[in-house]
Length: 190
Image (cartoon, rainbow, N blue to C red; front, side, top):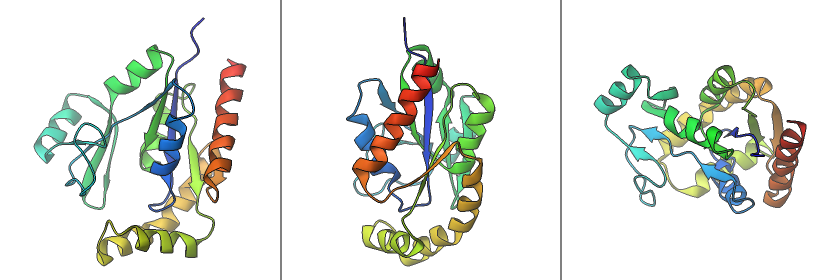
């Protein structure tokens, strides 16, 4: 019997380690697959089209919205991000675990659309001091962008109460173990 498919949005303030956690989870189980979001923002130096994101222009993004090709979408810091409905449907039908590194509002939208197949995990930073250090140390954004990301943290923390689980991401192996336990419980329950 095929295991049930699962949508696993991993959400957190910028700098909390979503991408690192997702990469670690992908190494844990062959059932994991990463959702490649569409975005209108320009790629960072280390990002590749079709691997990290589908980098598309605003006109194409708007077309995807009109055609209903996006299950969820959000405007974040002036750019648009969205999840392809086809990626979700494919993962669920194949019994895969679709990891989504997305905005908390987008994750909550997926919970509305797919309530039985979505487990939303909010990664909490060990502290706001650590979060601010991580954001500044990663060197992928300029000072004004870092400030915008920091200003958004209170709203994200408030929305975290609507997620299924909140995990403090202090030690990567512990975080991954906690998430794997949550998935195991979900799959054994169904």
